[in-house]
Length: 130
Image 1 (cartoon, rainbow, N blue to C red):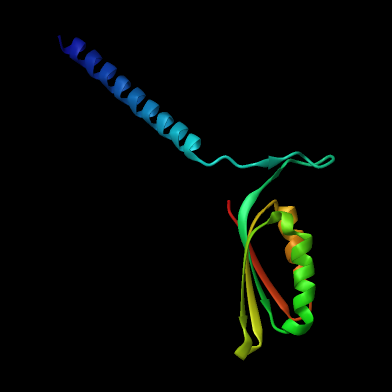
Image 2 (image 1 turned 60 degrees about the vertical axis):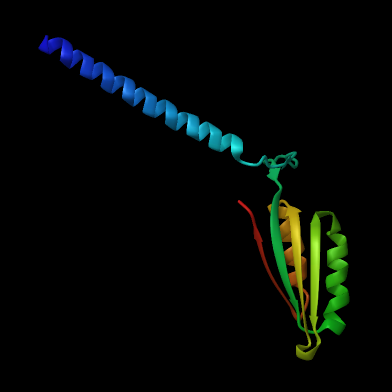
């Protein structure tokens, strides 16, 4: 009788552990399925596929008269990745602030911010989602 109770306890323990493992796997599967799908671009020649991500670019233009047209030219060249643009001229401080929302690969973001960062009197900060 004591041996049977011991076997029953062992079986109950194994069943409970199996249920815990299955619940964990079910939770992980649901979490993975709930993640938004990410668009992946085809791989460039000889490279890995590039993932598009949502991000932002913050631009501060200190000399609007000279830097403004150059900034606008760069933004026009990258219009295909820009989802939204908000500009705020602070005339009393002689500074303009532009915020962009982008949908880009890391390479596209790097090209955009790199070109903007080369313009005199322009500061750029950016970030991409994971």
